[in-house]
Image 1 (cartoon, rainbow, N blue to C red):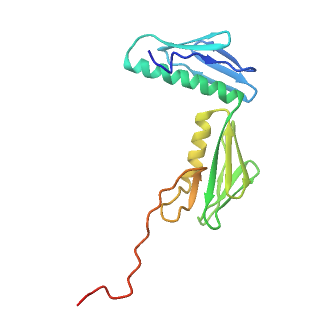
Image 2: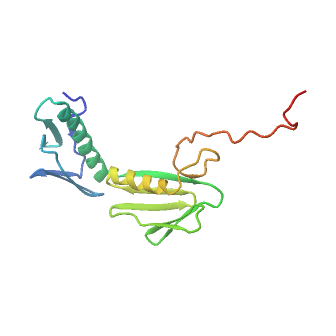
Image 3: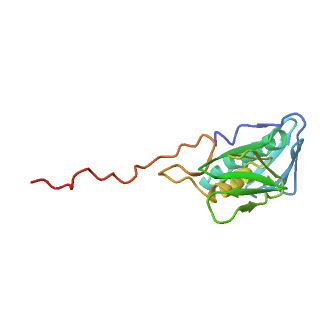
Length: 186
């Protein structure tokens, strides 16, 4: 039995979970999420708990069991408290600002990059070097953060670029400086 999959998921206050015709719908104060449940996985909503079960003990179904339990928990946490990711911009002249609903990035290219967030995602730029992405869908928040980071990933020599908050960039040494002499000995 999957250790993760057999734990029941607690439904937090203010969240409703319904399972009908293979679709799981989770509604809460931060929005509504729905997912089509894999046919080999059975989801039961009992009182203040959601139970996830599988049909057999095959490897694929054991993996799906834990996966769907984690997905259900992420949906419940997302509609109740939400998820957020923070990005930092490092580099001289690199900055971000909001232009209406779009994020404008000036990150060393000859042109600014405009990025419009997908539905359900909120992007903020509290300072010129910080970006906050928030929403109720954990997967979509991570995807948007990765997309913004991909415009200028941090480089290993000076560390310039867009990185996750707290991310450690492994630095490389540059070229070794030439010595004062010609390098030959007699």
